[in-house]
Length: 108
Image (tube, rainbow, N blue to C red; front, side, top):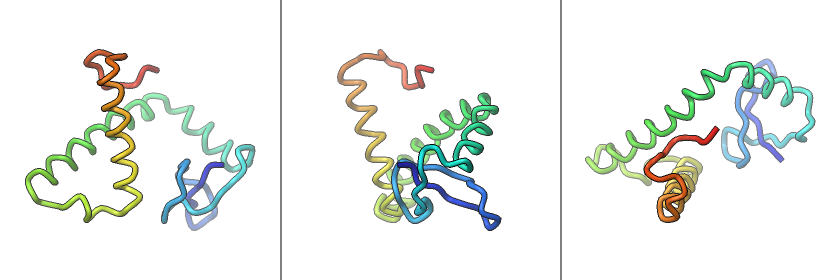
C-alpha cells in the first residue's frame, strides 16, 4: 500500500512506497485522492522526466558534500539514508550486471 503526505487542505502532495515521517498515512491503491494525484502527475511527463534527472543530481551533490566533510551521511534523516542506500545498491547491481552499459538513466 502507498503512503501519502497531505497539504493543510487534505490534498495529497506526495506519495511513497515507504512509510516515513513525511508519508505516514497509508491509503488504498484505489483511493480517489490518490488516483487524482497520480493522474495529475501523469499529465506532466516533462516535469516527471526532469524529476528523475534531478534525483541523480541530488544524489551526486550529497556524495560531494559528504566527501568534502561539509555534512556527514548520518546527519541526514534515517529515511533519506535508507533511500540513498537503496538507490546506490540498485545502481551498483545494474553496473555489475552491465545490463545497461554505462547508462544511468531511466529506460522509459
